[in-house]
Image (cartoon, rainbow, N blue to C red):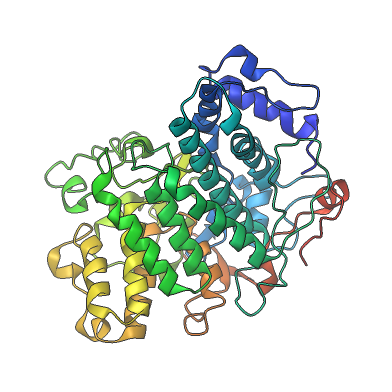
Length: 486
């Protein structure tokens, strides 16, 4: 985390050179202090548009209770991933810095860039006031998103009873690579700062015009997530309604795909055929996916790891036979035999989209309505999604569920697993549910190592302190005032 040239400037400049080729030469130069030179408003826009801001390192995809590992492929899994999966206290060696923070697309690098825009764009040259206002607003949303992800990795969940004393993350607001002192704010202070950034950004934000530009809809989405994390569902309702209000203002297509059509095997659905890896050839990229609001991707599955992460047997039982979402997964190992008991392996892909999406918006609103006892509204929202995922007969919420508040909330939580299995989103749900007095039992605290038949070989149990990763000895030693997690 120490912001030296060794750990920060070299990968950052490499990313800018490779991914932002349209930037001016003087924009790439390094001042003696170690900061990037940006002068015109367009220079700051080029920073914001850099693709490296959309690609992040994520620990959450290996932590949720929806994922299991197959023992026969364990040797091909990186040690970091194995340790995360086993909920170990140590993820990194004593001489290693956490990838989530210090990688070329880690939190420190992205916070540096967002802070640079926030602190400097209003005094840039050759731009209009409106352009500067919009860039400032988008950078504040970007900083809030980054800080929220940082908290999800390195702090305990927001607990109303202890948030004022639980340690959060350092709140970095300066674009200063020489800074070496990083005292952690409390979780409550961090959430207050995130809410402040998002709400202050609203006046400068516009509709969705591109899936790699931040919008008012994206800001409303993340404010909803923040308040749901805080168990403040009344405030969350205000902002999910605000997100839906932006839907009709989008200048690009935003809609749910109908899996009954695009995944229709008998009528040559448009996402077929399968490629040589057995994956869907025409599955839309995030930049062209009408369900994506803002593209945030993580580099994830590789070919050595492709057969290892699978549904747990418990998750597999959540799907009905008519659920077309199973067609997004494989029932075959990449070069081998059938996998138990349903299609349980994510198709091999180098990138996984983990950004805000329209399906999650529907399920967030459904959960909020159910928690406020608007059961008919919750039913309408969850069925609006399910009708796009299966036959109409299968999509209906059972009557005994639709008439009971707690049953409805639990049904929606299960629907979130069905929709987002193996994406990492379940870990974020587990964090907020862990402090929920009613629904904390909707968590399986165990990870399973499975044999080829799906039988459990080993069990690894999550302890409450492992909702927060450790920074590690090297990072703590390099940064004055940084306290590690237990």
